[in-house]
Length: 372
Image (cartoon, rainbow, N blue to C red; front, side, top):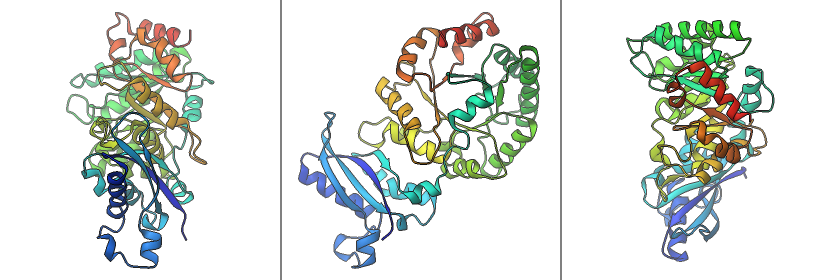
């Protein structure tokens, strides 16, 4: 018998009988996808068919139940996308079902090596100890390469540990990828030479399938300190493949663009913890960007806390990712963010710093607030 991994689902149902019927349907739909009475006896029924392990009332007031279903590693076949398909393939199209959490097995952990560097590696690259990381973004789309490079220079001079492309910067004519990469790496290097800092530039490599890996290798050769990719746009296994590539060594920052529909419904999609915490860590994201609570995206304090906890939870192998909350972060929010995230966090601050009359001084004031 192969080891089994588990998925805990929220199942919207009026009573336990309906919940059980829906949970058993998930077990069929996610594996054999045929009526229960024609499932072949023996190996298929005993091993391949999903198995309902537990069913309990949802404890948080939602009108439904939590069902834990186990699946055989033999269902996966050593394929990460098939793992995702088993977790929530066809059932993701049905209303009133949500993936709450994923319990990993040895085979899944072997398939998903996780972050290459993790939070410890990102801190080491920045030359800091056991304290929060700071990151900002050059923007907006439409600025010239020279203007974006000046912003990168000033962010670095102000002490930001990582300066990334805005997620909308790709290969536009105003600032083509290769030109922008070279200029920003040089600008950050100039700032580091002045300040003695170790700021890294992080280009956005999200793009056409045949360009992502090429841009990643180009970024490494040019002296970038990490790369950023939006897995929901570029592909979940593209991110995992890059993280596992023995010929690539940079940290990976995951951006949440195009992912919101996976988490915003209370009873469909994924929990914030499962999607941004567990799955992105399995993809190999060293830093996971997500919207901070109280900002313009509507994530709650507890949802954000759950992501951070999943980034750090013991996984029996994969390194801890660093949660990177952003979106509406400003100086006034720092104390409550410090209370929620503690020290194992990367503050992603963009627009609030661009509003400062002096960008370099604004960055330094942010650092003072974070490290107060």
